[in-house]
Image (cartoon, rainbow, N blue to C red; front, side, top):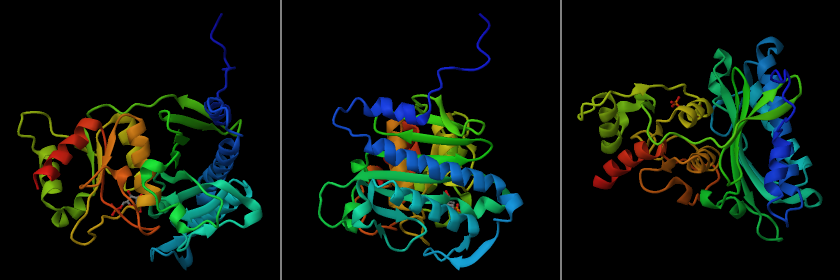
Length: 335
Ligand code: P6P
């Protein structure tokens, strides 16, 4: 037979997660319902981002978010959509968003057993120039029935049960791990469904790309400076690495996951804890990297072992191919 013009074994993200969850007999479908609401948010943002140029959604909303950055309309819209979708899922109790200074505590009648930390539109400074941006999320379970508090999300990343991102670029791709590997789903706009296109993503053990903002080089510490030097002027006769830096974490991490290499946002004299946020940037991307066979390091420890004390806390991060991160760990160990 000629190959079917239309694939008939459509593995949608919902079917995929139902299959995964069926391995846990006690699961009552709560996670699947939660995920379907996250997927709804991603579909909405994908549509809004694609129309942004036309719908004049671009431009400053005039407000500033708690990071003191000018808030763009798409930021505000995306945050509202995700908060509403997560609350209406009836499966969450605490929400932490990059856009909101305080955590959101869901009203008792709508509470569920999950806590979601997310950046609704990361890399938003790139919106106006059409560079890929994304949503990043991490999921904790609530392990008590008392009043929820921020303590329920101030947990190490190694207690996350799932994490993922959705990249709004030339195509809309959702990359997810529920703890059994990393899987990529591409939105088929004609169906409005995320279809499994990248099952079981594994990051190459070593890559030849390093990804860092070289503009901060004068502020880096010794080990980072030495490592980047090694990338550019290898002493062992190997090829120099290529530099690829988009400046949008989802785009830089997605490329690192698929092609290998290392992504770095180190501490520097100006920002001793780096720039990226622990709960909804560092942890989800570190979770995915480990699940894909890579690793993630803060300069001091395994990133997922960090215990955040504040919901918008920052941390330096070095993540990507296992062997590449080993090299920078060795340099920090010498310090
Ligand atoms: P810099 C975007 O604003 C962001 O939060 C991440 O998406 C990105 O990796 C980083 O900041 C870029 O920061 O200082 O290199 O512009």
